[in-house]
Length: 209
Image 1 (cartoon, rainbow, N blue to C red):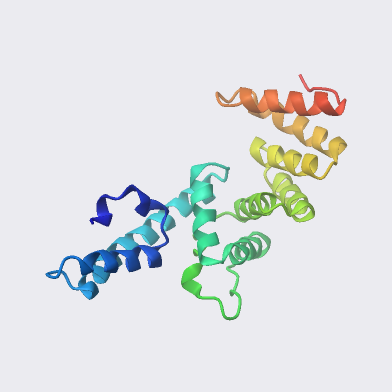
Image 2: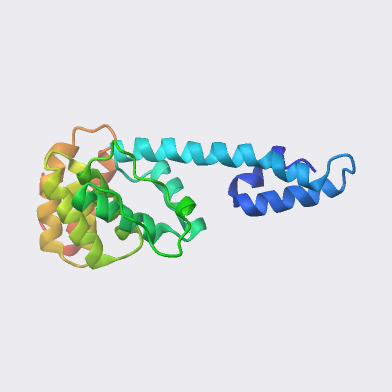
């Protein structure tokens, strides 16, 4: 059994992958279990380095997508997503790193890159809150991010989504109207525009043109 060629390995946590690799090594007497486990260490380090690079790119251009999902999934596996959100919020409000939570392994939370702007940190914190279905928290954080990023259509777009989820349709329409003039020129905007139209039409609102 060669886990290096197994497609399932990509969804396994590092610890479980290491454990299963050790089990597989039992059927190969010439490869000690300890050696097989040690072979995973560089790969795990590379994975963390890859996440650091991915996170650095994400804070430069905060948006939902595969990069965001991968960062969130890794922190969920570590049980540290709330800690990441807290760290982003602290950075967004003061531009300094959060000291961390007592008892939490520092290695389980990615460090905020030095290049991360405070408004980007606030936007990411709000995006996490929105994904975690924290209605009031997401509206508050995304409102701060949108105010700090007036030229960014996505911050207003996400604020509109947060308000819509809370049933604040009047506030959602205002945020959508702020976002749409700047987002409609994007090549990937049409599905989003149709979604807005459907949402507002269903609610009896006026569809922005």
